Length: 279
View 1: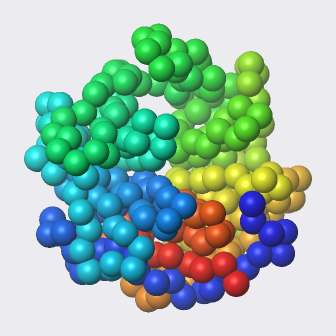
View 2 (view 1 turned 180 degrees about the vertical axis):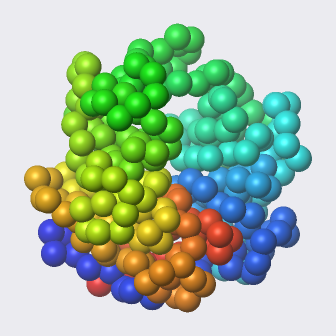
């Protein structure tokens, strides 16, 4: 629920990592997806450390490993290059996308292994316990047609069950209405570039209640907002070139927002997570 005229501070605050590449509890190694809880606790898919690490609000010194961290592998106690994570409050567990499967990991203390929810994943919708799923986007081979995707990365589903997909190699975000056989290009699709009409390898995304799209524009090192029907987007943070400054990113990937409207960005090559407060 982000106000129509919202802006964010241009200098981010490091809330996780920022101590170089590594596997200590105060470090990250190429963070990908992340999820900000209502209490501003952040859980992060610490991609190359094969773990999910949790950082609590106010404690920027060290994180806590809450899943994986036992080396790369397919064992139930391991993760395999996790790319995204969210908190399922109903079951008090983490839902993790890693390798070619989706797993559930209880947040209760003492948990040492996960439960496989989906194996050999594709871009499908699954009911819990369902094995085959329903195709909801793509499935027509690699390409740039409206019924195709090319290296889809992240997705967001709104309350109407519209599916928004960051179609990375097509440099666009595509919306698929439930039951549709073709997608609608919402942003990008104008070739790779840094104009306000373009994206360069879009990654994490979400849509607010006013149907405005927010996307991590990875190799333009910025986060963009696109209003429905607009011809071009707006840079809301970043866009100052690749770098480690408080107003810069080096390959932003994950994107999340808390209930206050603060933005969280997984700044992958800086091995940190930045928070940008809503003004």
